[in-house]
Length: 185
Ligand code: IMP
Image (cartoon, rainbow, N blue to C red; front, side, top):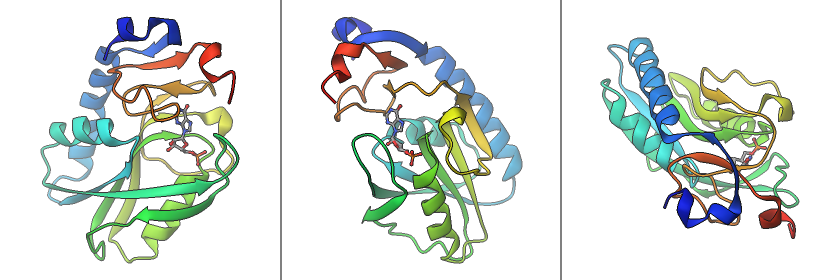
C-alpha cells in the first residue's frame, strides 16, 4: 500500500519511510552497544508493533529471541483507561531474561505502565522499552522509556503498524488522517 492508494484519506505524511528506517538504524546501533555480550528477549505488543519489531529485530546483531503479547485496554473509543486484559500472553518464561518491550506508540502511557509492572513481577533480569513513537503531550503517567524513535504531537496517526479501525497498518510511512475518516468516531 502507498499514498496513492488512499490519497483522499490522508492529511499529512508525518514520517517518511526513509526517516523511519534511518531512525531504526540508529536505535539498533544503540541497543546493540547497550546489550553487548547479552541475549535479548524482544517482546512485541500486537498488533501495532509488528512492523517496528520486524525492522528493528533485523537490524540487531546481539542474539535475540522474539515473543508477542496482545493486550486490550478497557476504555471509551480511542482513549486508554489503563485497565488492561491479556488477550495473548508470552510463550516464554522471562525469569532471568533481559526483556525489551517493543511498542509502536506510547500515548497516555497507561497500557505500557501496566505492561511494565506485569513483566517486572515475573522476575526478569531487566526490562526496558523501545517505542517507535511517543506523544509527550498526551502522557498521563511518567515512564522511563529508554529508546524512543520520534516524539510527535498528540494527533492520531496511522501507518507502519498503526491502525484506524484496523485499516492503514500496511502503509510504509506514518501519516495523519483527513478529518472525514474519523468524523463518525
Ligand atoms: P496508551 O495506553 O494511551 O499509551 O495507548 C497506547 C495504545 O493506543 C497504542 O499501543 C495504540 O494501539 C493506541 N494508539 C494510541 N495513539 C494512537 C495513534 O495515534 N494511532 C493509532 N493507535 C494509537
